[in-house]
Length: 164
Image 1 (tube, one colour):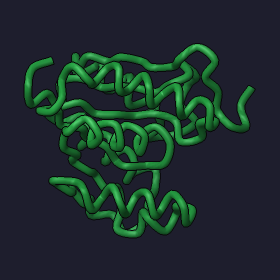
Image 2: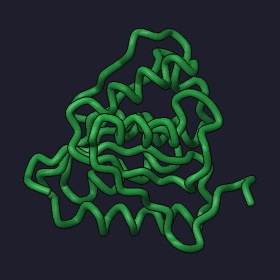
Image 3: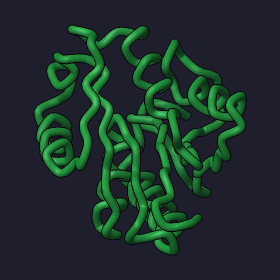
Image 4: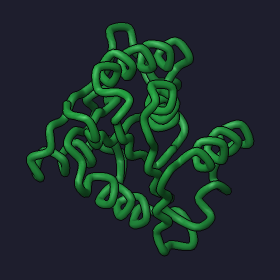
């Protein structure tokens, strides 16, 4: 990756705490050689997106945030909302989509915006099919269709809460 490399992220929200640590290490290993000119593009959702954003910022990169809907923060738990707000304040660019409430359509639009002008998609994905529009599997498929390089990060021992 060259300086100014634009990297997007997609991934599961429901990562176990040990998986969050594994994913953080995997992000940092993928991104370290490309800092500090790295630009991370993220919707700042809980889980993979927030872990990615923290890693990009810690490595001296910049964040571009995509907010799927005006009331997106209202669907977050208080802890997730605090992290979202903190990361949003640190974003160099914030793109707010024109949806009032988060819906599958707003998430799909956010993912289309996410993939615009990126060189690489890092996907924290267990390989399972999408559970609805705008899910991780769908973003991976869309990126591949657009000939965007995709690297799937699912470290050995990774798990999702509530999944086997």
